[in-house]
Amino acid sequence: MTFLLMAALQTVSPAMSERIDLTIPQPCASPNASDGEVVVCANPNGESPYRLNQPEQPARKAIPSAQAQVAKGVSVAAETERADVGGFASNRAMVRLKIKF
Image (cartoon, rainbow, N blue to C red; front, side, top):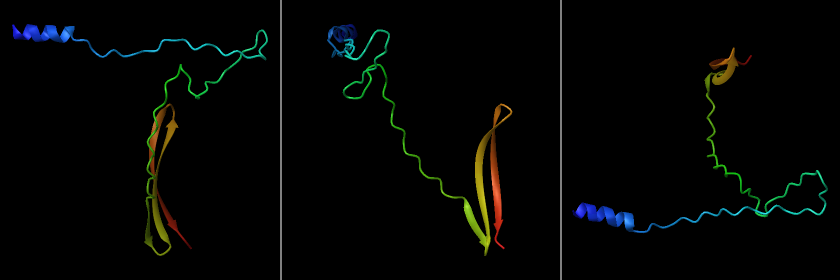
């Protein structure tokens, strides 16, 4: 019986209502507009009421160079890349050996 009483009290208690603004912004009046011209007006605060704001992208960390000195005048470097080959992605890894002479 107490369970039914608690369930009834939860359904009766008012919840905080959320206010939703459904007003339609008035179109701007341009004194230079003639028949057949399209006039685009900017919002004073720079935001469009019809678009969602894009979330900020996190800053990417710089990838350290994969290069090492093997001997005097000899270095080894490794690189990766991705290319489209015949309609599918091809991931590649390259190892470069540089010899100074």
